[in-house]
Length: 310
Image (cartoon, rainbow, N blue to C red; front, top):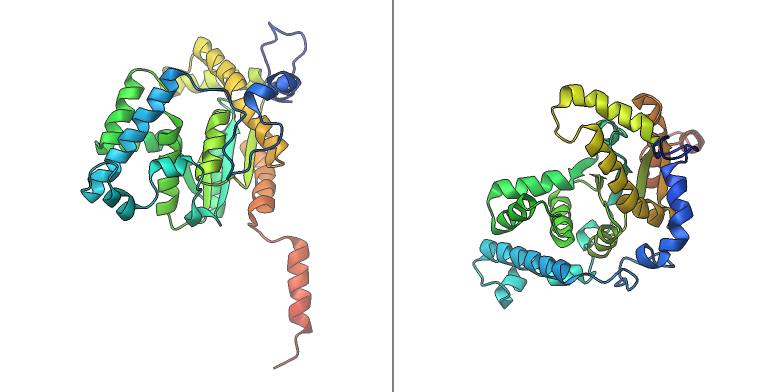
């Protein structure tokens, strides 16, 4: 069972996951390509951006370019800027990908509000040593730096708008490239299908997408319980319902996108965290090669035993 709609609305407690699958055929043209879009191909099946979206993206790209120029002393758009800092933002958006991250293991973690994503991420980091990245944290850190890009992000957030995808993906990519780790856990991203496509083009496709599925009534109970101590303004019943709807409308197409590519592992988030983590371990070890199976250990032991004495 998955995140479910309220029993007041439906007599059958249908899984969010199952419910959205039924709608997939109607939304294929708008949300998903008929075949998975390779990381190096410009997708041509997404809906056209509005004028406002184009303007926001252009403005974001300009801020990124200006920030790059600050670090080199070159004028924005000059040859020195490109020569000294590598590929421009425009080149990145065109799907060049990241050679530095070509061998990295990237895991996306998705799930509705209250599904326990944060707890599972902490456990993954503790056991496997993944670098844990949060798009929201990276945006807030950039604002604190006071760069032109940070000021741009702050203005967008104050107006209550979503930060354009090129900025978010750029910050994720830079954080990953600066890290010495080869394994990355990205929490709560991508939230929409166009973010998934942009990340695949500019960085690389993930090795694994974990989706923590949970009935809506269980999620609501957890969040209302958390509200008693969290102090979060969005932990109230009305706002929580809106967050559930947003997850249904925006993020479920991402879940379906990666299911079609064979990259999705759906894990029930209803059991206690330690039980959920057992399934998480299996998914991580299968996709990213962490851990050694009993068969591998037995094979290695038989090989060592067969070696001649020195």
